[in-house]
Amino acid sequence: MTQSTPSKLAMVPFVSVDNMMEIINNIGLEELLVELASFIESDFKRWEQFDKTPRVAAHSEEGVIELMPTSDGEVYGFKYVNGHPKNQQEGFQTVTAFGVLADVSNGYPLLFSEMTILTALRTAATSALVAKYLASKNANTMALIGNGAQCEFQAIAFKAICGIDTVKLYDIDSGATEKAISNLANQGIRAIACKSSEEAIAGAQIITTCTADKQYATILSDNMVGSGVHINAIGGDCPGKTELHRDILMRSDIFVEFPPQTRIEGEIQQLDNNHQVTEIWQVMTGATQGRRNNNQITLFDSVGFAIEDFSALRYIHDQLGRTGNYIELDMIADPDDTRDLFGMVLRAQG
Image (cartoon, rainbow, N blue to C red):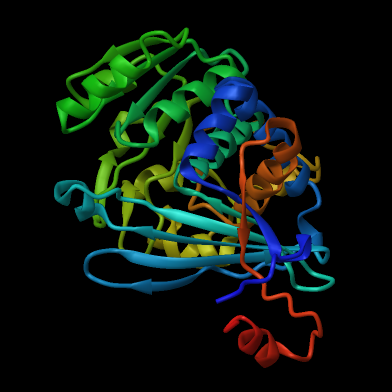
């Protein structure tokens, strides 16, 4: 059998899990999170240029599998992602993902990348970026309720972008908290293990909830939330999954990514569809105000949106020349005559 040598057009840069870890370590995690946040902010500020649609979701009793597409008219991107809370008990990741960027002008892929790690990075960068706009300017302490795979990325992003120096950690699984304390030991963050959500929240100006169970849960009850705090609610991300008591929502100014998606998947699925929310891109462009005073409770009801993944893929694509951490995959058939795909198969027989 003979095989032709693929042309450069047929080769697609692929960022594997190993490549992604090399990119992070070559750039440095904090620097990468700051740079990634700037890409997300830049894309949010041109929000109206993007195609926007709620993600396409296939739900089951065990979890959800989703496709998240968007385009700015020049580049198209999508992410495949799952969310299966039971996976942890079975030795699998709760969330796995991969993504693609493509050139709109000819449809050819520009990048194929792992996104299990990259999703954690973009979620942390988005959370901290939004908090820069909504949290109190003197915030230095964050409570992290739910200490799973996202936890450390969130803590480090808030340190790098918002200046947080103390995180108070609580999880119903004490082993998860011990893991987080160990991982954060040399990250320039004071990490404190707490025995309850109430203990973690005490003295915190920012509260991040990031739990995994697919259920209507009350991680925060109304009496736990005082005035002036910023809540970064990132755990509720599908129908039937929430973390906050409804009364907290009624007392908060709520900021979201894309209302048609958040009303289905976010904390606000508990509210009427006409309940007022603010799209966070409008705050970033200055079209509307974020935090107005020190007593205001701000709530970022984050479910993750395709533009954030687009930004993350765009950022990684921009780093390929900087780091060289990728391989090339022969993914696109490239016959000598573009009309003769069958002949290409025949010639491969030798």
